[in-house]
Image 1 (cartoon, helix red, strand yellow):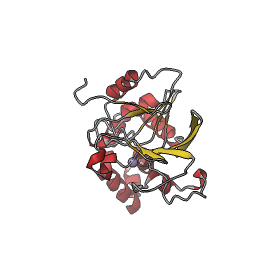
Image 2: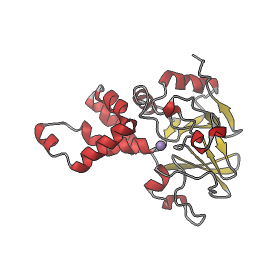
Image 3: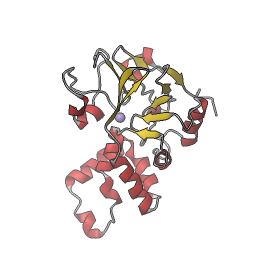
Image 4: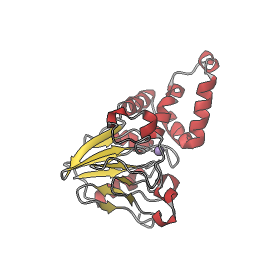
Amino acid sequence: MHYVISDLHGYHHERFLKLLDKAGFGPDDSLYILGDVIDRNGDGGVETLQWLMYQYNVDLIMGNHEAMLLANSFVFDEITESSLAALTAEQIDSLTRYQLDGGDVTLKAMHKLPKTTQQDILDYLRDCPLYHTLEVGGREMILVHAGLGNFSPDRKIEDYTVDDLLWSWPEITDRYYSKILTIFGHTPTLAYGNEYENKIIRTDTWIDIDMGAGFGREPVLLRLEDMAEFRHKPSDI
Ligand SMILES: [Mn+2]
């Protein structure tokens, strides 16, 4: 079976593992995380990243938050007085924006790790793809973090830019490829209206599965074969 989940944003790691158990996720299944494992809550998802690096059947697709961590990875270089003085205004600006966007907890948790582990995590993130395509039950699907910005039916998936795939904010009325189902996160479904609170949004061409775990809500694990949804109740331990 194939599963997707998105925007964990520092969701408690053990609770995430329990959610996989709840769905019966096993060694023959595949899980795709549609980006933004890190930032905002708890240890910023660093525990989940350390787990992810060693899972052969779990793939992380790049989110804008992973991209921001990578863009600020200069903070993990050896720091000397001269390297601090050599920081550019762009680097300082980028770091400030990342910290204001929830990166603070991730940077703090990363700094507690040995240098080699930090570099292993950064190397792992550099290898994460911008999207993944697959076929489930005869239906073609695109898994991507934020949607397909500047969509055109004539544009092939490989022709979208990093900004299109990581930073777009789809409108509820947007329609994507008619014969390919696009699944993404990034925009909490609640942002489309109160009627979507705690619900994934399914249109005929795309599905948004971001439940707003970055803001303390429970994420949904979606099984692609039958579109079954698994989630914890907030009261579940
Ligand atoms: Mn995002």
